[in-house]
Image 1: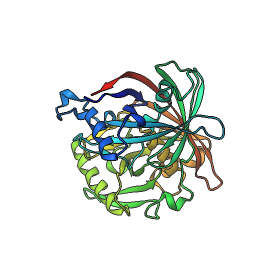
Image 2: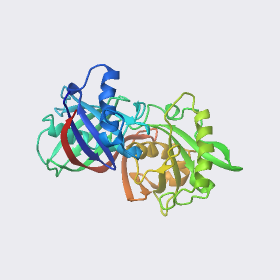
Image 3: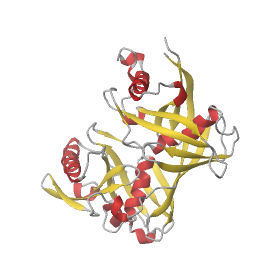
Image 4: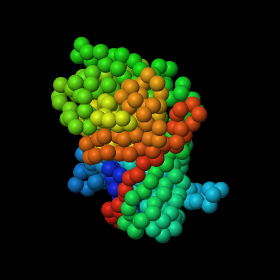
Length: 333
């Protein structure tokens, strides 16, 4: 039997299974076989693995330390993987900001970050090449609150953020016209005008069987519009109950599930979309009234998003606060 050290950390509203890169095989196929074994067990019997009914429970992180940055901060390379519902494959075309919340804690446990209540570290998102600055001010060895600042929250131009070149499209679902916006940010997203589907408050309303059927139609058309194959994320959006507020809900359409809170990368991409005139989020937010950031209203409360803006109006940086907590450290066989 081969022993592999493993750490489980709750990052934001997701649970991640963390590994040091040095403890895994170098070849991708062999490495992924080890990672999948954590979820499905040696024989594929769920009693022998972690499983994970919901997508937020099927996440992996492979971490390695890089040379310190010019500013002296530690740099951690973070390779994210989303395990599919069948526990058979790992998707690395997307990023996860919630799991990024636990990367610095893992670095601290491995001795790569200083074991102090206050600290900072750079996180390199290996899937996309983006950068995150992690700051913590009151940590213990079990974690605590952490601020994540996405330095590369927006592409170089508005055109690069819009894969079709248009800020919005109108599709048909159940005989109803629905506005959608396709935006390429930290992850590829389709933002859907919730009000057009009868969802005026996505944060406070559930999704019925009939609504899932409509979302199936919308998602299929969004995929057809996207110029290349992509793992497309789906988010219902509507105007909030005040200036600078959006009501939003992320939906896993194929799995018929809702994100119980909100994705961190979704928040950063929503921030990007809300700064592009003509998009669904831009109209709902009334972006001119949100100079320093905005609020995402979601089922668990309010998520405060701060930003600094470039001369073209797109976010230069997007910041938010999450928490992380060590669940356990052990050995995988």
